[in-house]
Length: 91
Image (tube, rainbow, N blue to C red):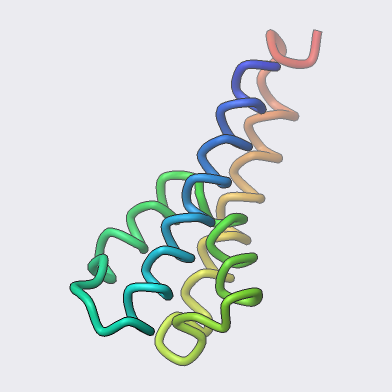
């Protein structure tokens, strides 16, 4: 389970920085990272990093206003279910 948590943290840090890079690209007028890619990163487990980046960088706040929070809540519920109902992980 420790490996899962470490991977989760690393993936969220990567997602956070990718959102930050996209904000930097937007400010400098260069080619951006697609919204699809940003949402896929959040869906794959980077929702915590995406929400923090959205708040810190004030990035995609109108377009992704509720989407990232919905993804985050769903992932939290799934994590709780997985954690509480998988005996091998709690032992």
